[in-house]
Image (cartoon, rainbow, N blue to C red; front, side, top):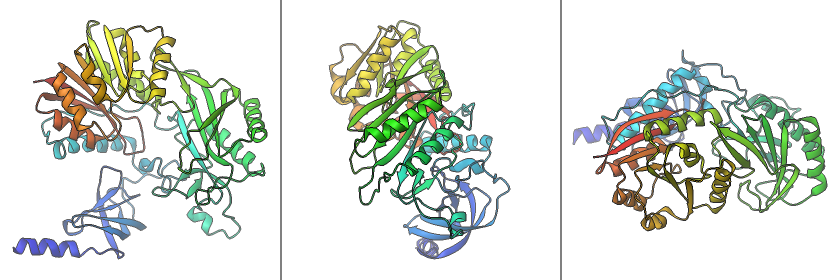
Length: 473
């Protein structure tokens, strides 16, 4: 009884809307700094271990709290300057304040801790993180939002001559309408920054307003840039609320005339009130409606709205680990759940007898079939539908199953069907350590997790991909 009273008293010592001096002792999964006054966890963004900070409590629960950083009283010895001017305010790459080797250590630990605490898989070997070769200029896709009233940086607030006018850039984390006017993004190839600046200047002088997410008025909505590493070519996708061919045609001609690397300029048109860049109508303004990228020896057509991993070279490392764990001999039947645009089946096509891919999104299935044809592959078959509906109708039991679900992981009905099919081996690819751990625990009755290898696709963020090898017990 005494222990409970003391514990309750300690929790009450941290109060919402009050500010405290706190020492950051760790980084939590999700990228926030962790303080533990009297053993009570407080999570604070934009902090690194070793910082002494002054923070205001914004959320208080029974067993944890969140705080907002007001001031760093004493900087940690491991805190880096950061290459990007916006890294403390934009949600894109918050971990620039930590050197890359240390980022990898935290990522490995977060995977191991998720497996142990969420999945109760305490003895599972977690290998060293496979690093990304490039830690800047690695993203092959960036999406910038337009705003009629941009968010001002702290140094801009002090300048009374600065007007809160048009901006194009990235959202302040946790907001839907606050856009930072990004002049330079360090994780995008440099030509993208030149294109971004040209688009900014064109919109400013176009006489057409940027879209306002509160009033739902305005013309310019998004700028999406895609870069194919293998061919060093670019796609520019201009997203607008309605059709105005004079405006977008002029911009397309200007960009294509200036940059020979631009091989495609698209216009997606949508009046949807949600902040989604996929158009209800799509028009090709210049060049082709796609650009071509390569993964290993395989070629892929990438359209404006097709899914493709955002770090091309790291994706090759990820798929190499999938190949390594699959250890195919050329005689196996392989089933790929959540097969998307067919990248994993195509990558494995030369190593297996037959590969089936299941995907619920019809446009992704169409892209997968097109990409298979593009590479003259005839042993990949793509099935459209919900996995829990398609799996029971399979005529062939796979020898190996590849599972690469979205961040939310597998539905429990799919887990049950996987166990019922009971392939000898599963290679599980995950972008979320928490749902990876949860799903592996559900499979634990039938499968032993031999090891897990994290692969870093997103330097300077807390995100981490993992590949797990499971063998039937």
